[in-house]
Length: 159
Ligand SMILES: CC(C)(COP(=O)(O)OP(=O)(O)OC[C@H]1O[C@@H](n2cnc3c(N)ncnc32)[C@H](O)[C@@H]1OP(=O)(O)O)[C@@H](O)C(=O)NCCC(=O)NCCS
Image (cartoon, rainbow, N blue to C red; front, side):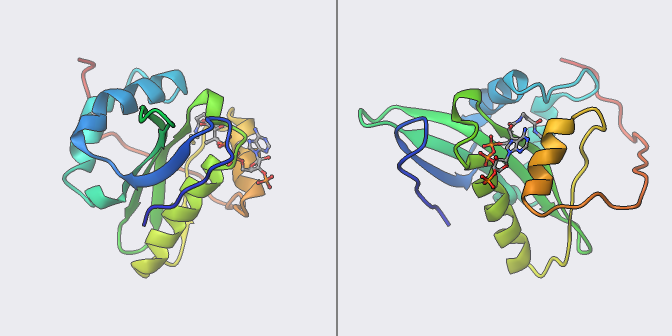
């Protein structure tokens, strides 16, 4: 399922593959830098939980430079609940933004969901995050005429 891309800003080969535990620190650092870690979410717990449900759909993008150095530059936490597909924690490292990596991560998420028979992908974006809404619209997503409701079942105490 890997694919490569050689002309992006990171000047290396960037491939998309499933998360492995050794990626944890890099992923959490990327999420923090991308502003995705909120006080009510413990990123380590979120990773632990994802590893119990469809871990193969937790994607990371990694760049390998000419000298063999490896760097995590993107993530997408994908899931299929039997009715809808979901993507959470879509993030691209700042230097790699605008190179098509976000589009590639979403394309891979869509491919994996279609492969599993998922008919529709849903996304939640904070209303204030207008830039990301524009990104998703560029990829063909439309704002549904629906209100998003939630109820926290397990409070996560920050570690
Ligand atoms: C959203 C994000 C993943 C986009 O990643 P990216 O790699 O920069 O996006 P791409 O380069 O693949 O862009 C894909 C398309 O969207 C467009 N696009 C990207 N950012 C955009 C923006 N802010 N406004 C409008 N269009 C945008 C690009 O122009 C591109 O269009 P094209 O392919 O038709 O030329 C990245 O900005 C990010 O990590 N943001 C912070 C984390 C975040 O908020 N995640 C979403 C949580 S819901």
